[in-house]
Length: 219
Image 1 (cartoon, rainbow, N blue to C red):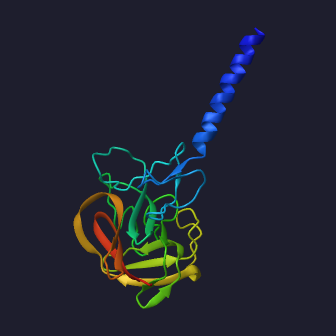
Image 2 (image 1 turned 45 degrees about the vertical axis):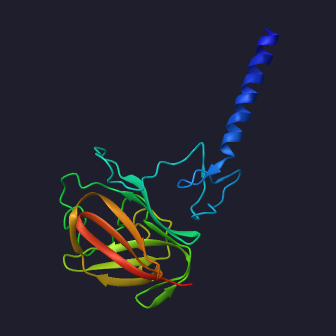
Image 3 (image 1 turned 60 degrees about the vertical axis):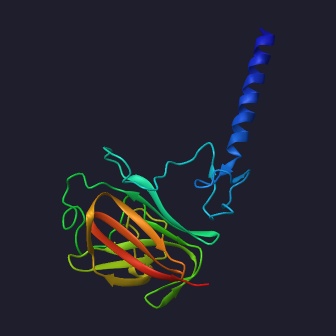
């Protein structure tokens, strides 16, 4: 009996060491060869390394394949810029045959432009929007939808639930854009588009509407 107990203790010790060793390995979600024994960023794209054991489920294309889930999907859009990356983290709700504009999403009100937590924008370099230079960092992205005009907002208070703690005084910039008609997009989806001259856009599409925020990266 004593031998059996010692054997069990040895097995549990080995399992504990195995789990501990696994938890100390972090990998890049886009470059699996990039590994580390501690948290950090990928040396190729700059994305945050994730635990190999407890990697959160993140969709990079919430509209890929048939989807019957009623939940909003944790999603990310990104673009590689040199050795860094621009990232938009958000939750993607579905249309599910609902009236979106002027219904589920009221006109004229600040919207998280996603679900659950505030949509976040991470910029690795300073950037310019509508002539205003904004430092590199992490920000919240909100919108105010309208029938003919949308207001796009970059706000410094990124850590909040929906727009519960939104305050206009924390806005860094607001710009007005015209919504464009697009093909039906069942799940809300962000797109980060860049070009070689350091110009780009951060666009969001849902149902049959798409809006875009143009920007220029600073060197």
